[in-house]
Image (cartoon, rainbow, N blue to C red; front, side, top):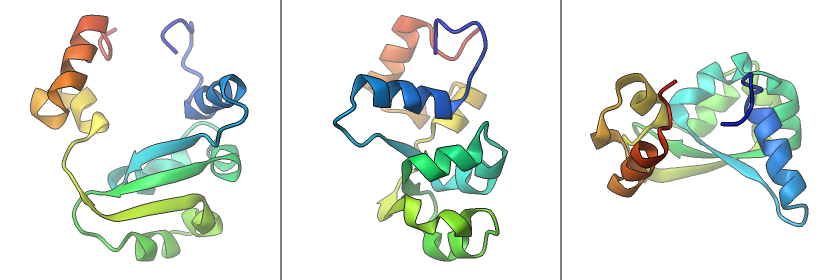
Length: 120
């Protein structure tokens, strides 16, 4: 993605990973806070049709219920692997918005700094 002239979206990134690791199942880790916005992602339907998502909880929400009650997500219920006992406020989305190093693991923060990630 860093070498792309335009952002192509998560779908294209996962396709690339799948091409590099054809014998492996490629899944995407996502925080529950991003589920309501998933329908707005580039190629959202293809993304959910072709890949599975590991969903980490953010605030002890009933994620199964949240997915069932969302008209877009309910069609793809079987594409989600939910980790209900994983409750963490670590968030790449919040980090990108605030650059608060408390929101990521210290080694992740060091890597981001060393490689100039998230800053254009």
